[in-house]
Image 1 (cartoon, rainbow, N blue to C red):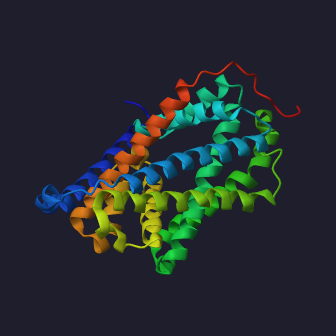
Image 2 (cartoon, helix red, strand yellow):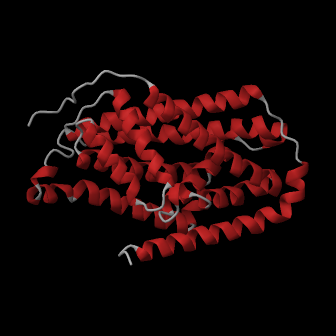
Image 3 (tube, rainbow, N blue to C red):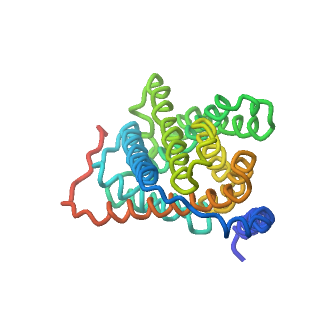
Length: 304
């Protein structure tokens, strides 16, 4: 048996637990869900889609910018190809597959796999931190909750380890010497602010999706409520590393947050719709990027 058998067991346990929770929550709501008429409002749905696609483009631009800190340069369209291809691996079992796909695609475009992986890890850690801070800003009560404190401490430790221990590793592994060679400390706060914009855009798109599907009843929740609900559930999926793309875990967290405001039936509908909405838009955006014909271009690297 593979040495990673324990990972697959934990993955199965997490997914089974989330599935049982979702069933117990959704089953009593099924009659109300069947009778619920959807609004299908074109304008809010269209704006929601535009915000999500723009956010994906924004995230790729920030990642492409961070590659320069590792003395790696690649065209934006090529960076988008790398990004979307690697993201498809999120839905496959095994957390390492996304990074393996990322490393493979990056090397095809002349980007060092170590640089591509390190910058994505940094981005995920900063997103975790900014997301936790954003949640605390809208709902300060989480500052006293154990899950928030544990996640924040873990993110700080991971970020410190990535940035502070790297110089020691480069002495033993010359191939890592270019990592963060072009970054300056004063650039990191601005980098965090740029990434924090993602949560605001996704939360706005989430509220518009709710209004587009559920109508005026969804407007009872404020912008801050939807931003917090989306961010909290997304982070739950990120923290649950055993669930591919946070599958089921994100939906379970989202339903628990939405139910007190929207009711059980609407919470289940919106949680499932959000997963399908984001996945479909991400797949369509990725296919569009891959379909764009481009002339070969050599990657520019920094000074040796």
